[in-house]
Each structure stands twice: as C-alpha cells, then as structure tokens.
Image (tube, rainbow, N blue to C red; front, side, top):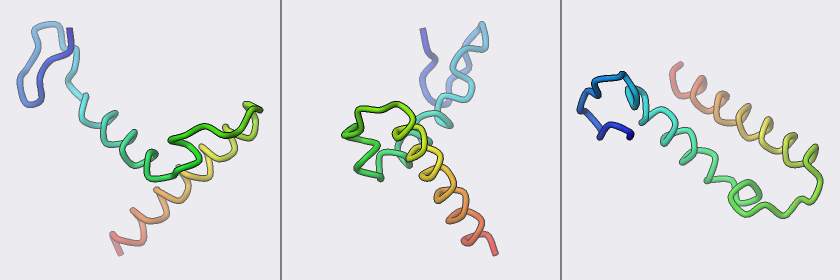
Length: 64
C-alpha cells in the first residue's frame, strides 16, 4: 500500500513517491518514449539515456 502524498506511512513506503511520478512525467514529454516505436531494446535504451541527459541539461541551465 503506497502512502498518499504528504501523509507518512508507518512502514516508510511511499516516502518519495512524488520523485518517481515527476520523473515519469518528464520522460513522457518525449513522444518516442511515451509511445514505444522501437522494436530493439538497445535503441529504446539509447533514447531513454538521451532524454535523461536532456532533462538534466535543462535543469542545470535553469539553475544558472
């Protein structure tokens, strides 16, 4: 059972749930990752790494 946002769970599950949800939302901005067109896993992995790099670059650029 995952804790609701902002509510502590007795076992500690769900403490950082929003981090995962936010990351998936950022990755879904890239259409080729949201709808998987690639049949080969290595191409999908490469696009996933490229998307993560672009997200990090945008976050760093915004902080300076």
